[in-house]
Amino acid sequence: MGAYLENKIVDYIKKYKSFITAEDEEILRYGIQIYYFNISKLLILFVASIILDIFKETCTVFILIAVLKRFAYGFHADTFRSCMAITFMNIFGIVYLSRLFFIPMIKIMLAIISLILFALYAPADTEERPLVDSRKRLKLKIKTVSIAGLYFVLSFFTDEVLSNMLILSLIFIGFNTCPVMYILFKKEYKNYEKYV
Image 1 (tube, rainbow, N blue to C red):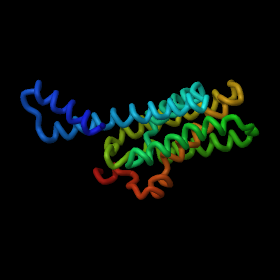
Image 2: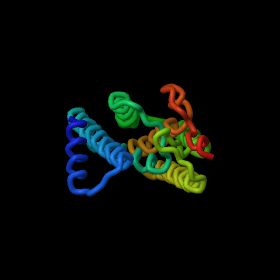
Image 3: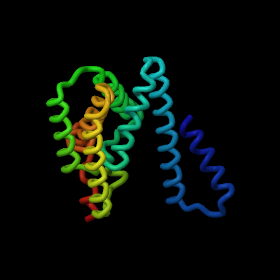
Image 4: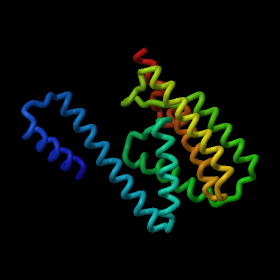
């Protein structure tokens, strides 16, 4: 289905654009694949959350993670299945773990570990999308650490479940930016160094 849709869109664009290079077509196909992949993933995730009766919590965690990943970047799986597995573990893991009681000291420790991980490793690039510009990396790091600090502070002023979601989002995404995930999945880390 994805390849069929991709070919239809590319053929349509080629029909109305007078000239498209092979490189332009490759970029176009990559973009279409990403959109198709993400829309499919979200549909599956939200349908599963409705079936499990955790739609509201899933939406909350999805937003918390999306805001962090917007600046922290982090690990990306190679296949749709592995991406779905990691996404389900991250989001549903946070949803279900957030229902547990965490003593304040544990939450503070998790937040500090997360802040250290972000300070050391964010933003974490990928082979497909290396972050070559050092100024951009620094800006993203500052934004990531700032958002992480904000999540930490907000966790003291919300109900227990949301407080846990904030802290667990930090630690889950913190580990997505550190080399552990890259090593486990045999992927390159600090890809920008190849271009410096």
